[in-house]
Length: 446
Ligand code: 9WN
Image (cartoon, rainbow, N blue to C red; front, top):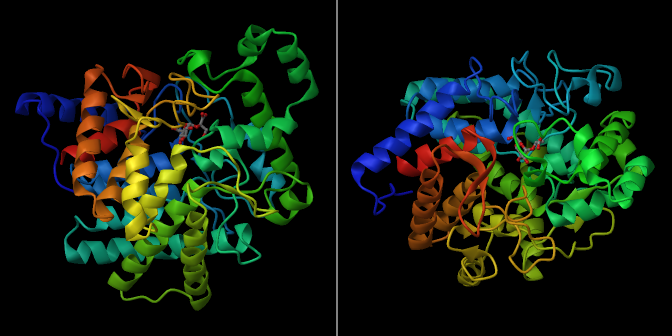
């Protein structure tokens, strides 16, 4: 996309760039970047992809290392876990390796401690974006280095998460969606609430539950996922562990399996980038993978046929009613027919979704809307990056540019990059010094 030229003067933009760089530097864990040193002291899958996309303008080798580091956590079966745990200083992470119990749960665990689920498969995008700013020979070497792991990951997604060949892959934990407490995910896991947690919640003692959680030391509980939902996610994690993180067992146990529209949108784009990367490296993808990738293209198009793109229950194929910003990632997938792009962009920038400060994560009129709480309303700069990129590739250069400008402005209104922002007053919330926010600002400013 085109560089951002906001009303702000050159020095203001320079200050924004310097602040973003300092955020990335201060979260550097040695070859990988912590999303936010205090709350998230390990390496996350999609966060690191955004980080690499931003860092490539400053230090392309460091950006490549960020991506390569992700593969050191890859499971022998091909899965890229959503967290690669690192011996971290600072605040311990609330969902730690003991909760995941990966070493005991799976026959062939990875060499390092990881979580047991994945995250939106943005890796091929990060690889392509880093590669495109490398000199040709270096790019070839980088692509050849990461291609085996990347192919294994995409094969895992299809083999494990779409055994029936529907074309859309299933997501089994809200943490895999990256948009943890968006309404359709909250609804999908609600029945798993542990009885004791429900009893305390129903007695009105939410502060008791908040007193038991460990993720609210840096960020106030009211800005994070609600306590009853957090304890429900721990319960889901324990059940996934009991199912050995194997999809067949997860399905047999009747646990949620959802064809998340955002996750699959990222997959559509990642498939495209994977093809480009392989072609550039002079390699052909395995025929089975190529077939599966074509199926996704068609299945995603069908998802759009019913109007606003929504998640689907993987068992019944039925759409889940709640709309979230993930639906607009169809633009990022590049899957919206030209005659529908204007309508979808119109909705995105219409009054239900966008106020003064960019697209909300759920519409303003949704019963669950809460401007400061996590994925229940706030604007997420990393989502804006995906949206702007999708708009630009869908022939909506003006809107893409405006969204980038608005995002840079929103972030630079606060003294440091935050995890998310109120769509009502633009105030920063969640984790401070949030690396993915800093990284997308760098990319938007380039
Ligand atoms: C669970 C790291 C991650 C992001 C997610 C965001 C949040 C974790 C948490 O932080 O989730 O993965 O503990 O809340 O929802 O998108 O990748 O920044």
